[in-house]
Length: 122
Image (tube, rainbow, N blue to C red; front, side, top):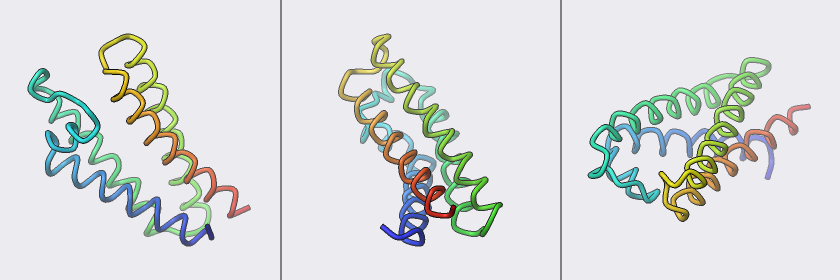
C-alpha cells in the first residue's frame, strides 16, 4: 500500500470508529463484544475513546511533514496501549476472551498502519 493510501485508510478508519463510538456508544461497544447493560458507565468511556480517535484521524488527514509524523507516532502509541489493555483485560477476566481478541487485533492493526506510514515517510 502506498503512503497516501495508508494515511487515508488509517485516518478514515479512525474517523469512522471515533464518530460511531461517540454517536452510538452502546452499539459500538456491542460490535466489539462489550456489554453496556452490565456497565452503565461504558457509553461515557466509549465517547472518550471516540473523541480521541476523531482527533487522531483529523490530525493525520489535515497535516503534512513532521507534524503529520507526530500525529502518526502519537496514534501508534495509543494503539499499542490499547492492545496491551485488551490483553490485560482478557487475562484478568473482565473482558471475554473473544472481546479481548477483537479489541487487541483492532488496536494492533491500527498500530501497524501507523508504523507503516511512519516508515514510508523516511
